[in-house]
Amino acid sequence: MTVHEHGRYSTGVEDLPYRSVPEAAVGRLAVYLRVLTSMIEQGVTTMSSEVLAGAAGVNSATLRKDLSYVGSYGTRGVGYDTARLVEHIERLLGLTRHHSIAVVGIGNLGHALANYPGFPDRGFPVTALFDVDEDLIGVPVGGLPVDHVDSIPAICAEREVTIGVICTPVPAAQGVCDLLVAGGVRCILNFAPVVLQVPDDVEVRRVDLAVELQILSFHQVRRGNGIGPVVEPIDPIAVSR
Amino acid sequence: MTVHEHGRYSTGVEDLPYRSVPEAAVGRLAVYLRVLTSMIEQGVTTMSSEVLAGAAGVNSATLRKDLSYVGSYGTRGVGYDTARLVEHIERLLGLTRHHSIAVVGIGNLGHALANYPGFPDRGFPVTALFDVDEDLIGVPVGGLPVDHVDSIPAICAEREVTIGVICTPVPAAQGVCDLLVAGGVRCILNFAPVVLQVPDDVEVRRVDLAVELQILSFHQVRRGNGIGPVVEPIDPIAVSR
DNA sequence: TGATGTGAACTTTTTCACAGCT
DNA sequence: AGCTGTGAAAAAGTTCACATCA
Image (tube, rainbow over all chains, first blue to last red; front, side):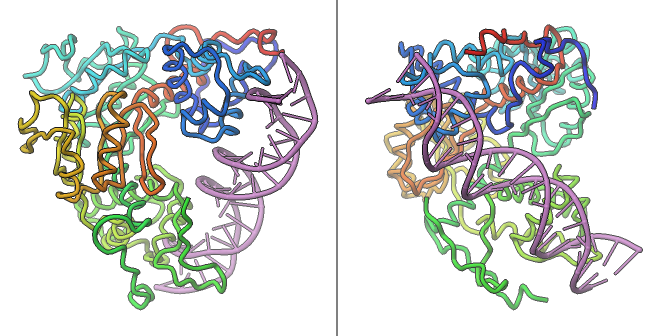
């Protein structure tokens, strides 16, 4: 709906600098990036699609197609230059721009995320913490003092927060979300098990831990693993009406 | 991959307990379940596909198709009986059988998950905690004492743990995973950003928080939102070869 | 020779649209 | 009249297989 023209892709070609990337490929590219980074640390300078695909847990054809959305940085008969690939995946994922995270809801989970080393390690520094609990306000968590949720719009705008992480209880989540949006935050990672209503230009990703367990439960039963009887078939007579 | 088709699509009438459920539908069914449960608490006894789909954030045709995998429990012209639907989704997801969780790695995140109310609330009691840190062994976390990771196989077997949650640092994750598998655990929720190697009959789901942020980052850049310059276009000369 | 890059085939998932029931 | 249930169409995603090139 809303198209912001802060900058455009002025390649001379009317299209994007990268061809459009399928949604499914984006998540995998982030995984390749991690594998590559770790390989580079071990001194690996070249990798074949077969090896990288194995390490990332995907089919090698899928990997090659995914990388083709980034560009052609492989050498036939040799493989990919790891450093070069990292550089281009990072650019594609927008990791070359400044990011800054706010965590809202400093309970057990929020506390853990405020201290999660994977965020700053991956270029996402946590720069603001919020809660409603007066006893928490001003208390430093991971070196950063907690502010009141009422100050979300002002502080997020001031600190140029780009991603909001919601770890509040369900009833508070939508309100907090609205405050983040008011503060200019356009990306939200939501741990509250509720579907948030947001404007079209805001992207929400939900991480629902109970849902993950339920999916695992389904597969276990389907497979007939574990203790106890496998699912009893539904009585066809009870089903029909 | 094991194919477990109980029957074939021949005459239009099948003898399956449930027809085979697409992977994508399973996750959504878990979401519908939560919405329904919350609606029932508010006294709602009937819902239309349109309303339920709205609350779950999906298209109503998708919802109806998903529910058709569970069976036909709607009434035309009226909608779905919420209680009945909950009952059948729970059965399909295997939530009627006993589940029991072990959390391995009692750092910040493990601590938070050991206390996460959403697990027991959703029928997944945490019944074992493990770590390597001698200072933690025996210390109760959320009322449950921490055991040493070496005792994972024995304790998991004894307590009939069905799901293992891995919150260890990356280097420890694969070893812990092997111990869980040795203890008879066939479902693993992995928070360590590494691809685990497991036997074919073990199901792993990975939750990678940094990947979630990177996906959000991608969308923000694509949209041209936020502060700062949009991605610099790649030099077309460098792209072509 | 050996590995990439990709069109084509295939599979899965989503959406449409409407027949059929209540 | 209104809403479900589902075939059929469309879209998205995955895998194959091989031409291509270092």
